[in-house]
Length: 593
Image (tube, rainbow, N blue to C red; front, side, top):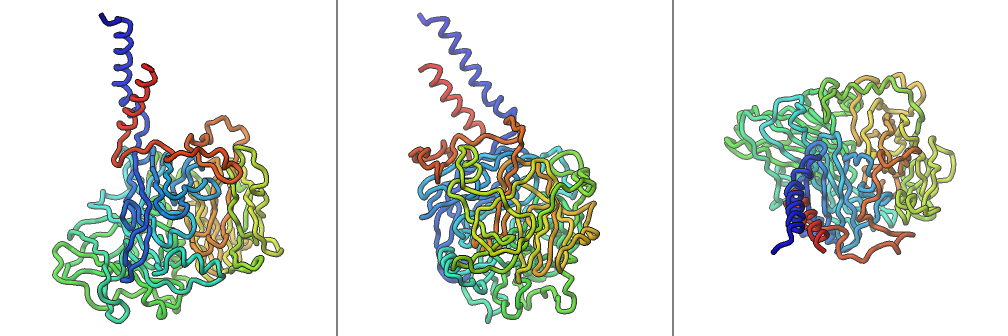
């Protein structure tokens, strides 16, 4: 006869196991993804070459999430070199351990995997992921990352009839290894070989400029419908002008913040930037229409072949697109046009974002600035016989032990908290100089671009208010022209050559966060630093602890565990239920062992 005590105990276990999924679902939901990063042979510009694919796709698959979701991404490194995946614009609240850059993470070695886990807390919008090491983004590895509004939070426009993702970028037929070898040798990369749209080359709009046999992207739409186009510049260093023949682009969102809606015929999208446009298919479809991404701020007659062309195809189209491309912006007599367009992008202060309260309720213009950083950018210089790029005269090299990990284990000498708040008249040097930022500070950062090329700058872990932008040198009087009410909040901003951009950042996200040039060549040559933000009263509530699967390297290499995988691998398409049942299974084993 069975032991009644054991029977009651088993019933107790089964009841709790049955309840476990509902308990799991009571919290914020989980979404799970497996990303296998590997090489693939493709011919984006008609020349077979090795590209970096994700799940055998180029570009990679979309990561689709909703505000406050817990996102679990298992990244498998099937390359022949180290890998890290970073999440451009995802703020990683309290969790710089998951940021995916060398200052905060040890790399994933070849034939290994690592599981990222983070919450997209209080965020919405259009972002992308990409590999952050070894110039790999130049060969691909990128893909879109969408954070949708929760159902209870309305979007400030009618629900679109569909979502369309467009990833644009300059492209070389040389591999990322060849490109970084050129930079290591002190060479300029030269003009790109073209521009790709969703991993494909240009439609043959011109038989002289575009050879035959190139696969191009076709976007299929229905007449009369309105679509949300999420456009990302995932390229290396070229600003691109985006336009659709005979169609208006209504700007609606950029990098997680809704904008004042306005019509554009074309928009300059700089490296690392993301935009959402509403486009209504209101033409008569006598033919297909061109979608164009052409190089900006270069000799455009010389760079004609550096143009991406896709096709917008109505379901009732009567023929292929023909004739010349829609004209690019003409700045010959109006050099202020691109600047005016940039400063015209304003925040929709009446729209709700990820929370029910309007985003504009944060009155940034009335908050006292606690510190000002003027960060000066100049052309690359020779340091110790090698070509390097600098910020305030310092060319950053990554520490052997990531900064946050070095702090955790009290590893000394990996970095210095001495990044200067102003440019210094001294000999440029290679160093590991980090900003010692103050928790809950409200800082003003001015990017002063004395380089000859357009630059984009990105801050991990944060959005910032773009309050001012102009040509010339920034001075104290420049503050008189700041936008103190409805400046757009975003994570990547352009800085015009010979100009400056001012941003305000509220330092409420504890951790160690990367500040970098999005221009891949400048970033590779050392144009970056980090902000270290510590809560002196940390009690475990403002910063998450290191994850259980944390990777070790550098001075902590001996702590590494020789495991095939660094986390439990969940199959593709797994749900939170799978996770909960797995926990239940192990609970059963533990109880009865």
